[in-house]
Length: 88
Image 1 (cartoon, one colour):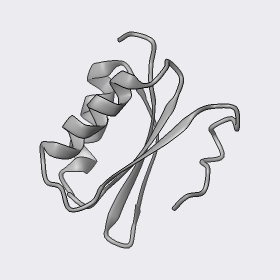
Image 2 (cartoon, one colour):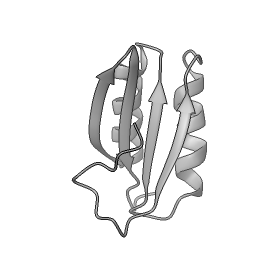
Image 3 (cartoon, helix red, strand yellow):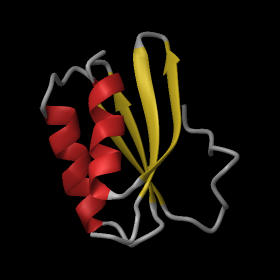
């Protein structure tokens, strides 16, 4: 799960956040806190185990003006790759 997504240039800062075991609204809240600290264009790789995150994280990205680059489900986990937009 530490592989870099192919759509992300190697020069882009990638921050990992593992929210495994946390339930709504904590993954969204934690992700927003981290994204607020990142530079525009930086990427957050978020891991969750809450199935509700499949709905919540894309909604958060849209509302914030971020780009949801990738969503992968594997081994009971959801991995989201979110690139911070410049509208914050």
